[in-house]
Image (cartoon, rainbow, N blue to C red; front, side, top):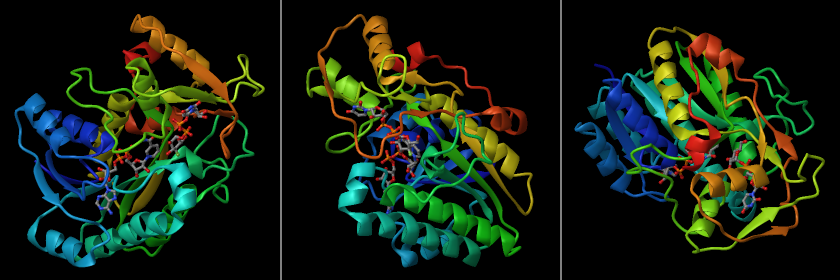
Length: 324
Ligand code: NAD
Ligand code: UFG
């Protein structure tokens, strides 16, 4: 069976992808520098599947490491998840974001070209779309200037990949634009375990529920039914299955770049998500209403028809499943 390399595979999304790939009988190799993860996630995946993940600790900013890796290992397809992802941190540390995300991606592309591995699936984001676009967002919606360094890295990598494919160098590339992945594998052996203070809403809701941190809702004065912002939350296992479908497609594709939105295709508000979480888990916790967070959109959700049609993707998990 084909060997799939996941960069950043020990992280939240990468480890769920590893699990679903192994379940679908692919072999999995992971490269990660463990800057925002640990090997616990990979151990959990091995425990759940009874299969082995090949792991090498290393940094995609290190070209020699990548060249050496591809020289030794025969890889059929790369899923590129490695990178930094916290919007606020990217404003404070732009260099680190450009270095990790852009230089890291360029190094990976170079090493792949050197060793003729030309199948790549990239973790992109809804953050690339222009903030003035109408909802829902289609794959053809306009790309923005990027509201922060993190968003700009995703926009730049998108463009680099498009230019590579245009150079007709036998690339097959799938760019997946994730909306708001949340939740964890139903086994609960795997989940979102970031180092330091989380940035995303769901891990912060979890910490509020376990009383380890106070939750603030960033703005309740938006023009939405309850005043809080609306997002397209979808289950991380659905996201992971979207990658398995993408791998199956890309192994047959030749010389192409395809872009797919992955999201549930419907938005719910921050307050609705908090209420669902409290109801389904039969738990109450306090939260406060604070100011809007700089750069946040009032409403953001996907049109996901293309992924359904071309990848045969069908998200199955509900908002209740995401919160349970
Ligand atoms: P994560 O931080 O849990 O995983 C990223 C992994 O990459 C971590 O394990 C980290 O240690 C590793 N990494 C970072 N820099 C590296 C480097 N230079 N070399 C090797 N490994 C490195 O984040 P995640 O939520 O799993 O996100 C994965 C990808 O999906 C990222 O590219 C992110 O931008 C993208 N994405 C995430 C979301 C989201 O809401 N989580 C939404 C849209 C896009
Ligand atoms: N929020 C709060 N309080 C918090 C944290 C978040 O109210 O403590 C709100 C935010 O204001 C936003 C919603 O919860 O309205 C979701 O925020 P997240 O930070 O979880 O997610 P974002 O929609 O801001 O961004 C996420 C990823 C990005 C990705 C984007 C794509 O973090 O990497 O989805 O849509 F680009």
